[in-house]
Amino acid sequence: MTADNNQRHIPFAVIVAATDGDEAAIQKILKFYDGYISKLSLHQLYDEYENVYMVVGSELKGRIQAAVMDMIANFEIIVI
Image (cartoon, rainbow, N blue to C red; front, side, top):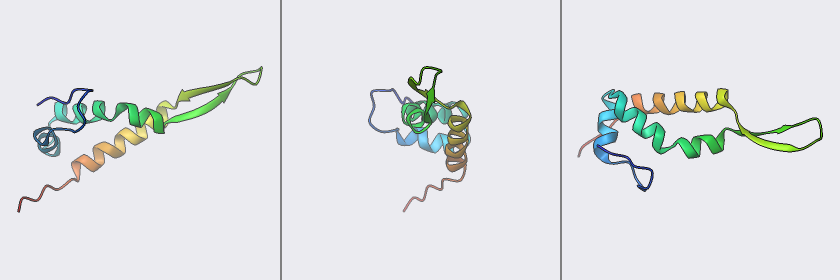
């Protein structure tokens, strides 16, 4: 059950384990999407000289991660 950063997809076994509540599998999914979640969490900050900095908002990132975990918990796998 691996989900390395250089993989393009999350293995099916990891998805199944995550939907069954396996914490390690859930963490692998969150790690897989960490860069994307961080990008979604970016916002601009300005210093006293009007310089712009892009920073990851930790509160927003945490809310997105919580939403992903909620989606995993409610994900239903149907085998035909």
